[in-house]
Image (tube, rainbow, N blue to C red; front, side, top):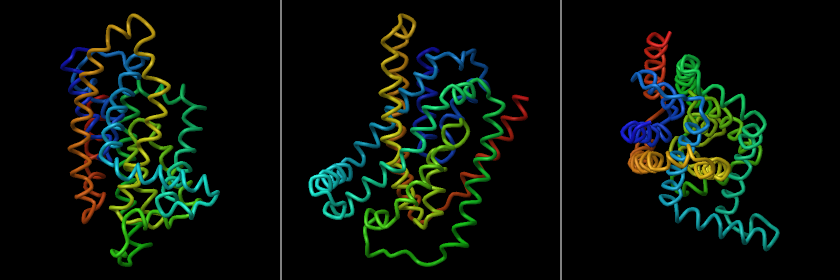
Length: 286
């Protein structure tokens, strides 16, 4: 890939990783639609995508830096006192994030070769994008039916999230597993899970963004060092850095917009977009 190609893919990744429209899906389909001759089954391409995701996770960590410091402090107190309630609601929030990370972490490791094979299947990804759109629309409908009551605005977002149970956190974690398949959005699937366990759109989005950091951080530890292991990958470091910088910049702009958006808006517009782009891509690719 050229520098321009990696910057374009990185920019799209930064936007679509946080918008509930699937960054991996766009990263797989975009080169095909633009006629770029890129071997998407090459391990270097996967490592490049992980690097752009790493930049996004770093931006999210810095954006929610104050929250993470309170989470770490609360978890440390809960460990020292051997009681989660001793660390307050931020300790509970931290442990909920740990539990919600487990399903995707285990399944991702066990079936990583299966998921890797889908990176070279733009046609399958286009269909999955359509399914992702249907999922987002369904989340709006189901939440409206199950949680029609008003939100308690006197509590902070961390307070409300911390009221979820351990089992509800596991449920969100299993929704995140969908994002291992290119075409399913990590943000979309985890927000859907959050809505279905009673969170508001704003709180579900915040929990989703916090949950992104550990799962991508773990993938980064495993994959990014591969950029420095072989001569072919070392030659690609410059392009990877360019793509990662583009991803980080657009991720920052995206998270600022989305936190404001989900204060009042819903998922269905993103669902319409996914169905439309998936349908168009299917026609063009098939």
